Image (cartoon, rainbow, N blue to C red; front, side):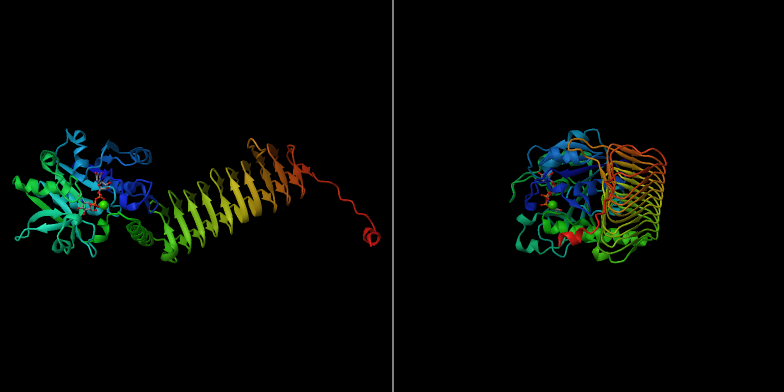
Length: 452
Ligand code: UD1
Ligand code: CA
């Protein structure tokens, strides 16, 4: 089967009241349009054409791996499909049509839907769902004999028609040649003055074609997002779905209600996620970790057996058996090797930290290469910025940095070096040296008595 997909995403999304095009609003950590594209790809689609219009440039910049076609004026979903006519001129067989605003659709449902269409002799199949609250959706009207008649939009429906709870999910399979053959006959004589895609269905039927209806048995999947209230509802459903998936794969989520995990996050077996934890973006976590309470990881690569609490880490890598927190901030470009301990109130930016190194409390390490087995005393600061440029600090293996040391970069501290507490280091220190860089202490006898 060669499945091609057309996704409608040109609409303004007026009801979102937003400067951002509707389909770029994120749910579960990624734009709703991306969810739809990913579901189509996973369902076996070999090509996705996306119709864009409102905010076209931004949509094109934000989404990869698809073909775009411009619908310059948004004259309705039927018109949107027409603007992609050229893209499908050479196509044959089935085209799957999706809307960019139904992010909860799963590839499993799409596969079943496409298979049902392909095994039928229908020119079109429309996915429908029973909605507890069908407001805003097109309602499905059947003939007395139960066959499909037409879809009536909410704004065009009579009071009786509005009581129908079977709605059009906005998901269709068409015989591509028959679709484009009939689409020109759709008019815009309706409440919104738009060319409605569902209106092509009764036209095909009038031409003697069969139209199939495929009812989804799970209405949540087919929710279309038109408002921010619906966006929040979809967010809740997606997150719940992700958490259940993780638990079924062997991850412990102590409190699903206070845990927020983006849909593309991966977590290994027997890792425990504690409450108030946010795992976002492309984060990957290994096995046997203890994450949280109170952790936010964004785009983090984390190894096995890592413990982290009350910390924020983003765009960095942490290897195995590392302990983090409380109150650690790890910033982009940082690599933390095996068995490192990073304790209270430590910030690390764009640095590599060698195996078994300890940063127990109150450090700022920026633009640094720290070796293995290093002990960095409390209050140590790398002075990496001279007001214009950033400079690197290098610390060799097994160095001992005394408390409250300032390392004025660029500077290199050799292997095995000792630095006395309170030093301000401005010059390189050769291997195995002791460096003391502080004023000598003077004790003045009987000073207090004289002052009295
Ligand atoms: C549409 C269906 C409705 C269905 C519902 C399911 C029509 C006329 N109505 O209504 O029957 O129940 O979806 O969620 O199709 N778009 C374009 N160009 C346009 C207009 C829309 O690309 O000119 C895109 C939008 O970006 C959106 C999708 O088509 O992704 C659906 O448009 P929307 O305005 O949300 O349609 P609904 O009113 O929800
Ligand atoms: Ca919609």
